[in-house]
Length: 575
Image 1: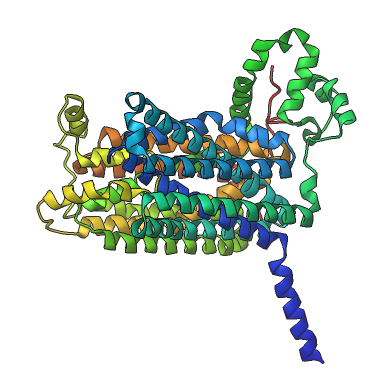
Image 2: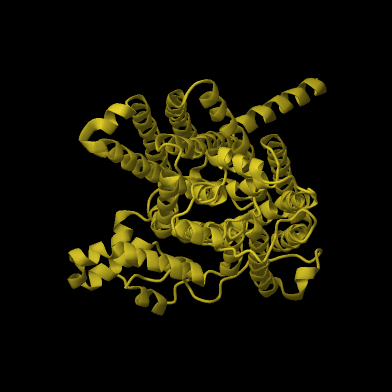
């Protein structure tokens, strides 16, 4: 009887896990990221193919996407804060997938009737189709950003409850899903396009997103039903209470001695209060400039956060060429590495990243969350010293006598641009689309003389792969710090600004490569990248030392939640 009872208990535990809100979130996130990775990989390939193997459309698309998130990140986060959780998630899901489906259908039409469209109105119909594709794809990316903020930065926190260990485990699992889908999803859609065609690839992605949207919608509804806390959101009250809040000014709330949680209301409540106090400001100009005030308020709120330096430290890690994006891949081609070796290195990088997420949960339990970030930063910087050594190792093309701006000047005066510069420009699109211009880089590599030594490039990739463990552990640390220390009513807008900061530094690193695209200057880019990573970790050290003091170096000492004592509410009223 005992054996049967234990067996039944085990079966019930397995059943409860597979029907739990936590597992349902994992399933929904896996479907969502799988579709995102397929689309982000394929859209760059489609745009290159449509424009005659030119990188113009991919570069324009990348600039539009990065610029949109940079400018609208805070506004998207504010929209997430102001609306009910289920409405935000469902709206983002439907808009994102509908845009991808529409974009796929439009691309199928263009691929099928490209010659006929090009003959109409001197090609303006085809140009309009290109503009529509980029615009709709950009809307899909903005909806994906909103979806990422609401699920990964808000829903996960609510489902985990007050359990910090459970939150860390969920964050690590979500990151492992990201790592796996980042490799497997492009492989799948790449095989579909290889054995079929681009037309079939568009249809496959559109069909996948249609089915995925329906399944994800059902999963979101199940999670919402199983987690009653998702129905309540800080700062959202019934209409009567909300009307009372509109009649009160923020100054009066502070004078009445309210707590920070009570005085920190959503952005639109403060805006409504100001509108009631100043009826003259309710004109058309005031409404038009409201997004600008929201944007300003979001950045000011981000600056006033107690975890400001931790967030900035994460953003600085995006200013680097030391990752498995198209920049490093293009450089590897010029150094004689073929696609087979690069695929193995990418697999090793993914394994290293997964090990970093597993190590994060273990170190956090032993040393605490803040110390985990410090340890991860030291580990990442230590591994990146191999990359600095590779600049001066045998086989390195590093040569300061060659002007890093020579290729840019050559391009501007009208001569043929080098393939590396084109590849760097294509990198603005996404960090995983090296295959879009792999042929041009391979041609350049074949024209180069045989290398005397592979020691330099071996040290470079050894450092990059080893540093992934510290990188992903540090990323998870900062993510959880933001989740735990930003109040619920500001969670969306702060994460929106964080996304904008990440995109800003990412854009700067691509601009840096465009200015110095030749392989001889890559060593200089490596040194600059390590300097930015070091500055980022110095910012985190300042945050950690301010939070823990000398206890930062004592792993057995308990940590306390960071307190924000600078102001009763980090989110200012819109004036």
